[in-house]
Image (cartoon, rainbow, N blue to C red):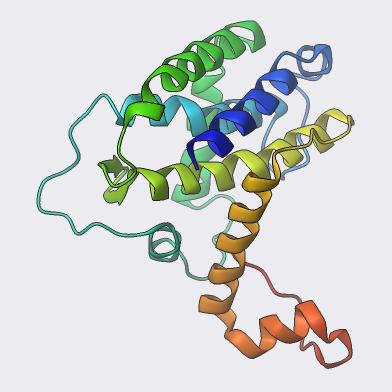
Amino acid sequence: MISAFLDTAEAVSVLLRSPALAKRWERPSALDRFRVSGLAGHLARAVLNVDRWLAEAPPAGRPVVDAVTYFLAGAGPAPHLDDAVPLRIREVGEQEAAEGPDALAEAFDAARARLAARLPGMPLDRPVGVFTHVLPLDQCLLTRLVELVVHLDDLAVSLEVPTPSVPAEATDAVTGCLTRLAVARHGCLPVLRALARHERATGPISAF
């Protein structure tokens, strides 16, 4: 998981340093209500936040949960884009990107370098505070890997450039997590049919 996370972060770094990002910085992104700048900031936070979380002790007295439980805790009816949580996500993404694309890329790569030095020596069961939750390190990295892989594609589409490839270990981990989320939300049979029997599929299946 550590190598998949770090290698995927390296692919993100290439995109954050793309000339296309600076050119489109203030334009709308492929995600509704997100500017390219805010989307880039949101994507970068998947690495920046791990660096921040590891510098702090996890909240005391919280149960340790896995990545699927973490994501399901925020599951529910799709919020309106002007609801508090989506609005806050966009605001924080813009705050992260406030100093411009060069500064964002520098901060991202500095955090990535610190994590590359620190993570390999850390036990995968080390508890990490992730917002209001506590996850083992490997599950924390899995949640951020989902963010990296999904939003890497969002940003590439926004810039009209090919989506960078990520390691097979990363795609296996992310698709496995998303499949488990989809099963938890929709049930096994609808997911099975969506993946293997399109003639009996009941409709679109989404993990979120």
